[in-house]
Length: 57
Image (cartoon, rainbow, N blue to C red; front, side, top):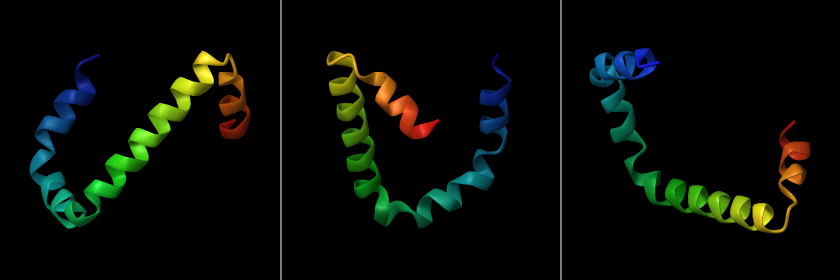
């Protein structure tokens, strides 16, 4: 189960330059992620999480 994390740790040197390129968009990505988490929470509270499954599936 730890294999993906080990691969990521070994490949981090290759991945870090990519993150420096998207640094200017990081705030937008955080906001989008936050909105998705809020949306999932609302759907979960309302018992409508299957709506999201229908959209994505």
